[in-house]
Every structure is written in structure tokens, then in C-alpha cells.
Image 1 (cartoon, rainbow over the protein chains, first blue to last red):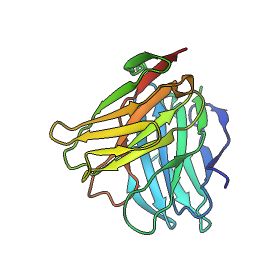
Image 2: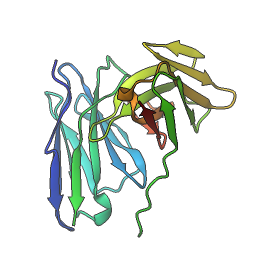
Image 3: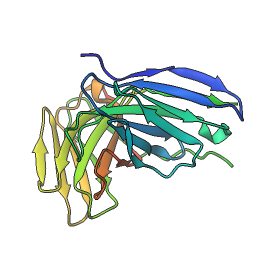
Image 4: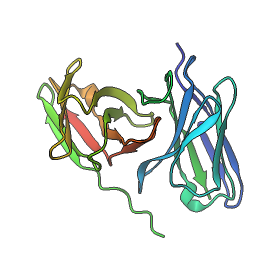
Length: 115
Length: 114
């Protein structure tokens, strides 16, 4: 069974640009979560999607957004990039049959550098 | 502003010894906990989980202990191997979140000395 796939793995942007990151969850997993990992703040929750609906949202500005498609694939977008957005963005999928928590399977991440 | 890196606790152990990694969690209402291992350049990998109605759970070479009285979680790794070298995170889920919103600790860097 293929794991969580994130693309691109590495990217460099400049301040003010926008970026879209993609995540393909493990087949059969309907929950997709996004986390930001930085040396300064550690792992921080961005948002979670389940059946195309945002179910939870972390404490990030509105420049950070996401969506989930009917095949459970998810994208996140960051607009008007700032230097502080440089981070490893991790996607995690989980098999959930309804409300509740479950083991997260993480991808390798997309490393974003903002210049 | 200046981006100051987190000061990760570090633990160095001899190969074959047992390792104990500790985590203090933040919320007494947390009801589900997971330990993750993250190797350099990779995403976190699930090790073991425990729900708040349990005090102890064992896996292969790993044991998680939960002390709700002092909000403390520990991960014990038996017969530590070089492949165990990584950063270890505890993560907690705080109700009433009906989903996978986890709060991660700062992590502990484990180095196994051959």
C-alpha cells in the first residue's frame, strides 16, 4: 500500500508570492491533516479535512487555506508569502469511520523556503 | 524577528541499553496520546498510542506509560539500537476536538552510541 505522497518535496519562493502544496493520502483514508514544522515553533496544526469538509482549524492567519477533493486528495495554499512561512509542511492521513481520532500517517513533507 | 530554534532535550544511550523519553502534556482533558519518531529528512512515524483510560501499553520493544495525576507520559525503548536514533515527539488530542487535531511536544533527540 502506497504511503502519503506530498508534492513538491522542495520549493523556493519569494515574498509576496503564493504557493500550492499537494497531498495524496493513503488509499481509503478520508481524513487529511496539515502541519507546519519549524525550528522555532515545532509541529503546529494547520487544519484537517474529512469528506471534503474542514473539520478543525489551527491558529494560523487566513493566508493559509486548504481544500479536499472527492478522492480525498488535499491541497493547501499560502498566499502573500512571508519569510516566516519558511517551513516543512507535513500532510498526514488517517482512516476514520466518523468522529474521533486515529493514528496519523505522515508524508515526507514539502520544504518551503521563502526568500 | 530572530528565528530562535527550539532547544531540544537530548538523550544519549549506549546500544543495548534501555531508553526512557519523557513528555509533560498540557491539558488534563486530553484523552488520546501518540508517540512519534522522526528521522532526519523524513516525516514523523507512528510508534505507539494510548488512551486516557489506560496507564500502560506495550508494543514491540516499546512501552508507553501514562500518569494522568501529574500529566506525564513516557516512552520506554528496550535494547536501544542505532536505528532508534531520531527525534521523538509526544502528541495529545484534546476534546472536544472531533478529529485529528493534535498538539505536539517540542521533541527529544535520541542518539544511540554504538
